Structures are given as structure tokens and as C-alpha cells.
Length: 99
Ligand SMILES: [Zn+2]
Image 1: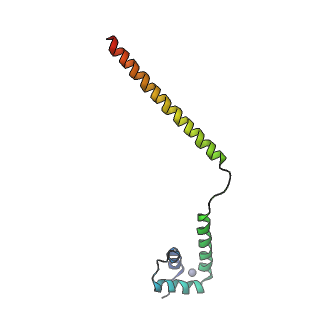
Image 2: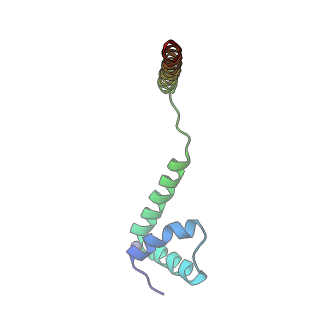
Image 3: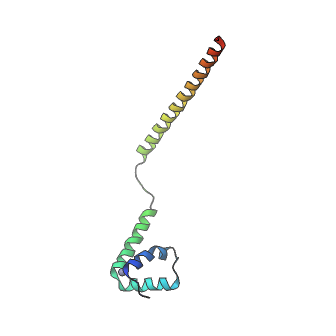
């Protein structure tokens, strides 16, 4: 079975996942043997796959600091909300008792 470059490139992810029928896999391998452009595409595809699996490295202290700040702001907001509700409840109770 002859396939063109477009079909070959569509099949590459399935080759990696071993989802191709034996005849499709054979056709893809035949195409790759005869097509330098698709071999290069396969090489680049595999390189991209490896890059996607790499764990990012670097300095995460800025992200950690922002997360801590965000948590602090959230805690303050929750605290103020609870205080406001408590004040409202107290005022409501006082008002009811004075009527
Ligand atoms: Zn090709």
C-alpha cells in the first residue's frame, strides 16, 4: 500500500502508541524508508515528545512567593467576611432585643 506524506505524518502518533494495523504500519515504514522529509519529521516529532516529558527546571521561588501571597490574601478575605457576618449577627441580635 502506497501512502503519501500527509497520511504518513497522520499515522506517526499511532505508530508511537502501537495502534496501527500491521498493513498500515508496514506502509508507514515503507514510506519512511523512501521519504527523507518524513524521516526528518519523525525525528523532530520524537524530539518534541521527549521535550514534552521533561520536567521543567528553574527557579520557582517567585511562583512560591506569589502562591503564599495569594493564600494570605484569601485568608484575610475569609477572616474579614466572617468578622462582618459576626458583626451583622450581633447587631441584628442587639436590634431585636431593643425593640
Ligand atoms: Zn513523506
